[in-house]
Image (cartoon, rainbow, N blue to C red; front, side, top):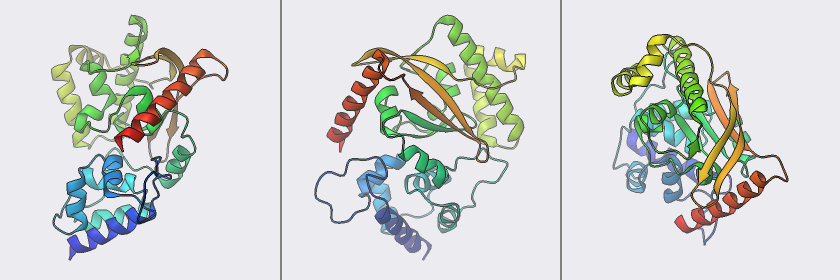
Amino acid sequence: MTATELGKALRRWRDRVSPETAGLPAGGHRRAAGLRREELALLAGISVDYITRLEQGRAANPSGQVVEALARALRLSGDERAYLYGLAELVPPGPEVVPQYITPSVQRLLDRLVGTPVAVSDAAMTLLLANPMYAALMGDFSGLRGFERNGVWRNFLDRPTRVRHTPQEQRAFLAGMVAELRATVVRYPSDRQLRRMIAELRTQSERFAELWDAGVVGRLEASRKTIEHPQVGLVTLDCDLLRVEENDLHILVYSAEPGTEAAEKLELISVLGTQSLADRN
């Protein structure tokens, strides 16, 4: 019964979200106005086969990560998200866990910034959502899982990045990330995943361990960033970090002053990214 109700709910919510609303091209003949399974899979980072099995009742009890990803992709309200957790026989994360819920109001804000690279992360700097323009600028993160989606993890373990820092900028950036993470741990001392990530980082990164043991405290500040795009080359943009205090979310926004070379390059990246997305779908 639970699996059947879960499948019905997913299908109902999928039918009400248009591809345009989700920032996807709506090309081709469509039998319904809502998202196709392939599009929901793309938005949630889940296989099409698994979504099919969930909707058809052939799979049950998805993990909390899957439920949260589906709730974000389907733009569920707080009550709907709680209902989805209940159908999956799970309890929504409590106040002791770093929140990862993107409210409909924040989602609407992102919908209006389609021409601007925007990403949303939680307080531990784990990427929750990136719009197509952000993916065009910074690369596609949709295939990353677990700690690989965390900015601290990726930067201290030298994962590939298009951002180019000077040595001085890199030192300040890494120190700021550790300071931000320490403040997050204070707010969510019982979050086991956060504690586990920090323990693994201390083991795998000597620099992280040094900064962590030094007790740096503070906030990660926004700054101008230089990105090396594989087709457009170097582009320097303003990078603003907006904080949603109620849900402890970080919204990262990249922009360029109109009429500048950077603005022209950003426009070109937008065109290239749109073409790439159309080819993929």
